[in-house]
Image (cartoon, rainbow, N blue to C red; front, side):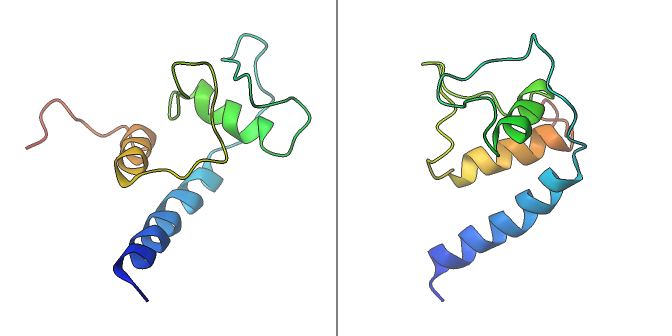
Length: 91
């Protein structure tokens, strides 16, 4: 197994279980809208639930880009937001 594959699996093994712990509720009508995430698709509710909790934000062009790979930095940021870690006083 290459280092890159190991890192991807490690990130997935942390992010996916944590994301599954977030209770998925009906998305508020006022929630952020992503132009590439259509209502009625399997990923609509989870993406909007994470956006409502400000764990994910999407891109400045209004898309979520759910088919794109995430970087380690993006995964770290999502985990930090999910766990509500203090980033102001971090070394």
